Length: 356
Image (cartoon, rainbow, N blue to C red):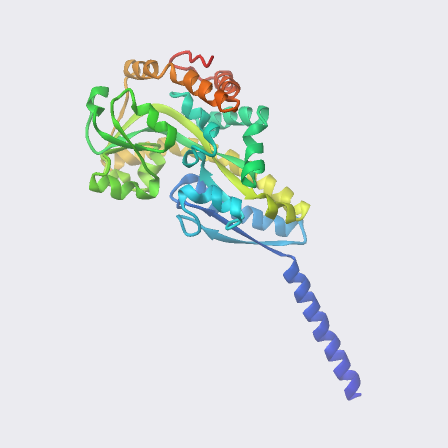
């Protein structure tokens, strides 16, 4: 009797141990990160939408459980190292700006090469999608060369110019140190400003200490990074809402994921992509109002000045297209698709750009 009871107990323990082991096998851990903090809209959506939705839907639709290990604001990767972080497998999923990869991904900043584009981030996404859907290279280079799969594009809000000094004409910007990221520094050439490459995590201190006196930046950053404390002037120039961030996953890790988990991730990633457009669009007027509430002098650049500025950059798209074509990249094709897609979606360009 005692032996039978012991055998029954051992069987129960063995079953429980086996069940626990099976459950453990069904747990999938994914490391997700960005060099930017959640003060950036796209990172906030990674943290507040993508991660919880994937977690919830995988649990509801599959036999698996996903546990995310999250690292934002440089906790796992810096802003300029996220592509490499995903490539090497240090992280499984990364959100980052292609602007920090001018050598690796020179064509992925194509919307910047068409200044004064749409200020609507939802339209910006449509323009970018038209390009990515028609030019396989845009996604394929990430897989072939950098061992990662693009699962979502990420729209920014509309770019303007914030400064810690008042200015009334483009001539007032001459000699001023103005920060930007990558190719958007070209926009300052007409103004005669001194361009400074930087990233948002450094912005507050750099503005405060005089490393530079302004930023080509969307209003969400001016609010969320409290740049209004060190920059009391914000001018709505309308450089354009740019889709030049992406959410990618390491291909080796991706291939090991069960198909049903992949399907959920792609489903949520598609919704996440759309939200980067809709949330930025919805928040733009609120952020402009918030800046005014913080005592920032907000003004709109006169159309005549914008037209002069656009004319000064008129030859640049064709120059970039030729440069990219010479490097073996589909530069002309991409810019022509982007121009047409923007026009088809209702954008009125201040001037007619020609790329060939």
